[in-house]
Each structure stands twice: as structure tokens, then as C-alpha cells.
Length: 436
Image (cartoon, rainbow, N blue to C red; front, side):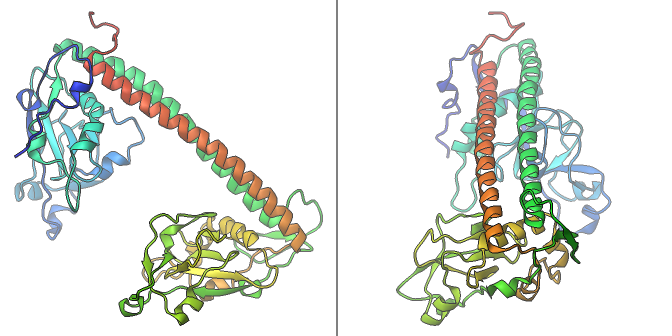
């Protein structure tokens, strides 16, 4: 039995209009998933079936009606399940995965049991209701609970309340916010495009630097590589194994992992481009023989065997007594080999999908030790490598600073958008065309 009264969120706002139980002004419904074991329910179908992926993948503001979905079901699947064909202008809210995402459908669609739906009565405009759902996103996050998967349960859904101005005022608010949020979304889109362009420019700089050097204008020579055609004439093209020792991590069995002394270790997911995510690392016991094979030293290059194949970073010793596990290659420099130069070479190749095309694809794409060991990269003299790495590191730092500024600007625009919607649907701001 819920103790939620539906008023908590609105008590934080100065309301111009009274709130009413949503179930009093809109028909409450949900969805269902037809049996996946019946191909006739899912193959060559024409009934749109809404999932959270359809909402999270949208590039627009989310206020425009959803016109199609990535998955479809058949009339047979609809008839032989609890799925419902919801009418145009139904508002749907995700109450489990991606909690709080909402949408208004632009034509009849079915949906999963992960959604709750409302079809508005004559006192409630569906565009306005969708705006209210957007405004209540923080409330939906608060209402979600569960030991395994977070969910907003129906007793709380049934208690939801919405501000209810006259229907003409709702339509005026919807028109006003359609214009204002479109302006904000346009600014966000431009900043996201700037981020993409900056990242593309950096990747181009990396490729040029590791294949041609910094400002090189001397003689070149042709090389037999799919991703690079020529390099400066005085550079070499050695295999990785000529300058580095390779060791592929492997998963230790449960018995060998047990022990009184537990050590942190890196997995594939912890290795990002030129950095490591070392928060909340998994731990296990490493015996003496396993330590020698799985230890990390400053200067080791860690390369992802799977996932984003070839993704790499250089271990600088962020944690003492840290090890690595399966799906990671440890590439250790011989003598004075420059690990950071290799990391940038790996980046240049990976961004052109070199490893995806060359990797083992028996199940999923992965890069074997044998394939990595014989891969050839441009290799300038040590002093030139050092200059190239310094230039790339400086450019990477500039990129990081610019991206942080743009990301913060995007966050502020989204916060402004959220606040504007909440203020408009509650009457906290004057909306043109709405009488004071």
C-alpha cells in the first residue's frame, strides 16, 4: 500500500492552478510483450511497438510525436497477448528501464509492460501532459525503487497529480514551449556538433602525427599497409613484438581467486582511451605465479582485446599492487620503446576500424595476441617519437579543456530547459497569451 499522496513534487512549486489526480482526466493503461517464441508475432509485422530504445535514441527534443519504432508486432501477436493498440496522442512513460522517459505517439502503437500510458480526456491536452511528464522527471527518479531493478509501481502511478489550467491555456502553454524548447535544443545540437568536429580534428591530427610526423616535409617511402600508404623515408615499420613484450590476461578460476589477500584488477571496461577508470575496481587473490603474469608496471600499455578493439592506455601506476584480467593485452616496452607513441598509433589504426577488419570474428570481434604481435606501425627515431608524443599530449589536453566547457554548457542548457518547462506548466512564469 503506497503512502505517496502525489503532491510532494508540486508542493515545491508556486502553483497558479489546482492539481487533480491524473487518473481523473486521462485513461490509465499499460502494455505487454507478445511471446518471443512465436515468429509470426514478430516477423514481417506492421504494428509499431514502443520500447525505451525508441525514446533514448531520439535526436529531437522528445516533444514531437513518435511516428515509428525499431520493432513491430503483428495483429496475430496483438490478438494473442495482453498488448493493446493505443490510439494516436497517447502519452507513454517508461516506469522501469530508462525511468522517466516519456513520449506522445503520432499514430496507433502498442508498447511493453515497461510503460504506463494515458489517453487524455476532454479536459487534458496530450501535448501539455507530455510537458508535465517532462517537468516531473526528478519526481519519477525519486519514486523508483526495487532491490534488483528500479521500478515505479502502479500504486504510486495511480496517485500522480497534474496541474490543470483551462484547456485553452494548456494549448497556449504547449505552443509557447514548443517554440522556446526548440531554440534551446538548437543550441544544444550546435554544441554537440562542435564536440564532434573537435574530436574529428583531433583524430585527424593523431593520424597525421604518427604517420608523417610534426611538420615533416622530407622524402617519403611507400609501405604496404591498408591504413597508411607512406611514411618518412628515415622511419621504420617494425612489428609490435620487436619493441614490446605481449601478455594476454586470462580469467582465473574461482578456486585460485580465493585467498585472504585481495588485490584490485583491471577489466576491459576499465581501459579507456588514454585513461583508466579505477573507481570501484573488482578484487581477487593473486598467487605468486599469477602475480608475475598479471602484474602492472608504470609504462605498460594496456590494449583491449574485445569491445572497442584496440582501445589503449598507458598505465602510470595510479594504484599500487594492481593487476589485470582477461580481454586485455599487456604490452610492455623493451628497453627505451615509447609506450605512448604506440598508444597513439593504436588509436590512429583503431579509429579507422583496422582491428575490427583484421580481428578474429568467430563469435565476436577480438584481437588475438598473435595478430597484435605481428602488426606493424610507423616507427620514427626515439627523439622524434618524444616530440610527436609531446605535441599530441598537448593537443589532447587542449581538447579535454574545450570539451569540458562545451559539456558544461550543454548541461546548463538542459537544466534551463527543464526549469522552463516546470515553470510554464505550473504558472510560475508569465506565458504570452495566458491571462494573468
